[in-house]
Image 1 (cartoon, rainbow, N blue to C red):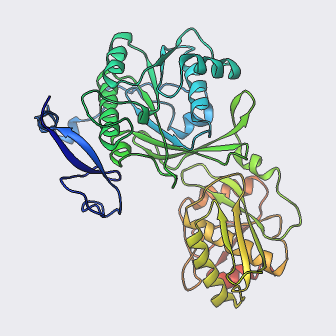
Image 2 (spheres, one colour; image 1 turned 180 degrees about the horizontal axis):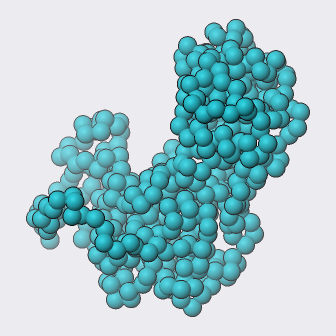
Image 3 (cartoon, rainbow, N blue to C red; image 1 turned 120 degrees about the vertical axis):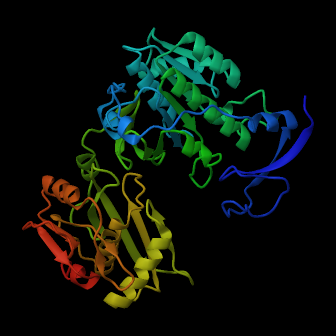
Length: 447
């Protein structure tokens, strides 16, 4: 065993430093350096030469054979992934504990095992626990093989010997390499495990899905290199009290990012929702102020979701500002814009904003619906049931254009919305569009 050496590794970017400091000099994050033990033999091994290929002209780099994708057996999930799973693809799925990650992956494993040999590796549960869940949701198959193991080298040998067609690892934070001195879940262990799993996936052409835990802030635990090394990053979102679950594709090398798949949590597992818009609109209240429909999209597939706002007189010295599924910092900006441009005093009002169904929206196109929902609640006048809106609001009150305009309009018209408030710069021509230059023009359609 080599001489022991102490190093400090940033949990955000994976940079290594000889001494501790409050701020990472590489990525600028505060209080992210963690102490780890490394031997000199290990450090020497990491500095070794790696194999390389010769460069070729890009004109000769075309793919000769089209890779056949594996179907997960879930139509909406296949569409979100760009048509299925590519051989050798490495997918990272993250989400809060209890959100349904293991349930979804066990269902996917069962579906694929109908025509392929599947290996489900669990480091968090025993084989019997996985069997009990599989029996409950009807995911039991002779071609679905379960392995309870946490040592990386053993797992790699088993994959090479067993030669499965599809592998699931649950989760990456429970695995460890005996070659490293640090504990499972540490920065160096997560980096080593993810890189080795990716390496064997590319060599053997076996697709691998890795489950990643999340931090208290909701981001993927471990260094950012974990997200960079995989081909696809998917986030499983939803509130435990809601039946809805949304799988959002954040990164995808084999398809478009931003695509989503919606599921409903039921007694026998997760059930796909093929038409999410009608699913979210089914419980919309009628004739109530503070509610508006927003055509949400971060990919090519739009979904109509309900945005709600509640404004009431505060009883506290400092008014409350609460949000669910919307950035609270953005809410503060919208409140300031409404006060100045519309002339509505809000400093003595509590304001609550909610995106129904547990969906989290970060795109700027939701600015206009949130502002209209707030004003609708203030004046206590319902938004017309056939009206929807989207657009980014600038600091001077102007309505700015957003992407995927045609997709949003098409989805809104599909569900009977014949009044759609859009930015004035929208190039689409349609009689249902109401083009506005600023927030004052948009608000005039509520009064």
